[in-house]
Amino acid sequence: MKKIPLKPVLAIMTLSAVLGQVNPASAHDQSGSLGKINTAIDQYQVHCFDDGSGPNGYLIVAIKDLAPKAAPKLSVQVIRDNTATNTTDAVDSDASYSPEVNVGGSGDQYYLLTVDKTATGAENYSVEYHCMTSDNQHTGTDIFQLTNQ
Image (cartoon, rainbow, N blue to C red; front, side, top):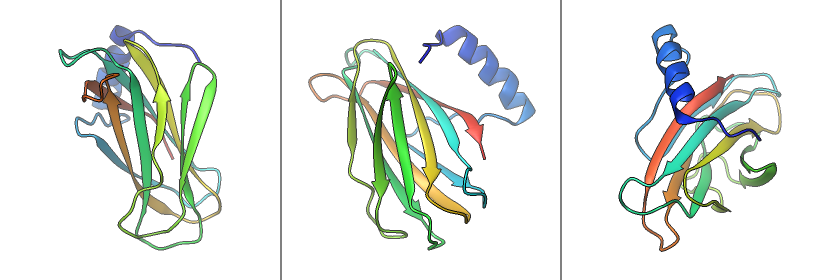
């Protein structure tokens, strides 16, 4: 995975936001939906950085499959340095997120999140994510949507 410097990402995000292609988020959850085709994916880039709380130590991610209740199961993959980690929400439309995955990092770090599903059918989701220091404090977090299907 190629790490992208922040300045080009911000320039692309600004241009894409004007064109209606990117949805920046400041909270620690990102809602979205996947279209009906079984190959639909959404992708996000999460940037973890020292915002004064301390340098990034790891990223925590989980996914929740929201209504409507449908056959496909939703998963999120976290990719860093050519290594992918996955978690799947086993129960559709309940109040619980999938088991959390913890993906290590150090300092200024970029992660790629890919949300996908197991079958045909439109699905809605919420991804919860937290950039954390090695001593378990929240630190700087930015998220940018790269693909919206």
